[in-house]
Length: 214
Image 1 (cartoon, rainbow, N blue to C red):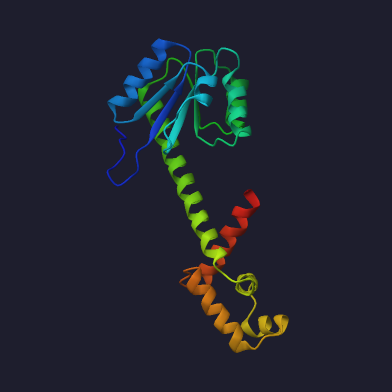
Image 2: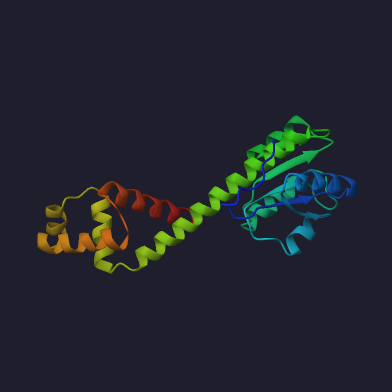
């Protein structure tokens, strides 16, 4: 089964980090045969300092690397704030290593020799996950931009509305008239591009969760 990107999707890229030239070339050839862009590196350091395509992607990482293990590099990526789905490959895999990789967030752990289709399926899942993550971050950034256009009073009222308070309650708490609250509330709905009260609550929840994560 082929998984090339559709014309409506932004381009994607697969990174391969493996110190074995024959493995790198074999994987690059396989991935290119189904339409993926591929960048290969012989060491983890080369990946970190090299110029990488900024696009939805996936990292195929050998567990055994010169200098440090793939698991150590996985931790280094997380510590550097580089978030990318990782597919581990190894010729020396064991259960504890696999469990450690998966617990640390690895997408898949394939032991050589693996089926080409298993690798392609894992890569496709990784790219889709990264595409979704990037879309979520872009949407969150857009919501934050909208929120920044609200006045301090509008931000205050948005929080109270999202918390389930009625106009009368908000008016009493902020010592405003109900008419004034309604005007501010309408401005909040317009600026945040909320189609309904449930929509505004969802937006407030996403902003709250996004702030908590960052």
